[in-house]
Length: 193
Image (cartoon, rainbow, N blue to C red; front, top):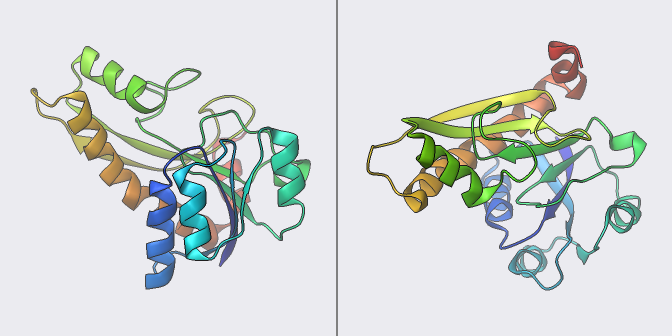
């Protein structure tokens, strides 16, 4: 079972998903701490309600000072909207979810509705999400898992976002379970990074 830190910037929908699956026993993880780079967001309130230690820290140094007080195996970026630089001991242990099928529609500036707008503008008939290890560049670490969703020609951006988020709710926990099974280094060695 992986000891998790969860970083978020907003409402905590992914935190809700993690918590529900931990309670059901279908996620091979335990949340040790939740940190937000945005003060007073809904996600921090949810973390407190669930009984997780919850903190605000505005930058990487502040986040890393908090994480140093906890025994952490992985850091999950759960709607965390900044580039995170972990301490050296966690450099290969940061997992992110991206709302497209990497390498499409990813990189600096591609997040949330920016991604779904680009998918719609390109006329894509599929989209999806990618769970990957994060490194010092946006969306370039080893891929753990991808899930596709079919798009209708008349899907609007909100519909695309809803379809992709539903896939994310399945993919992120499944990816964490795979990391628990195979270990972090398996995924880094698999792609030669």
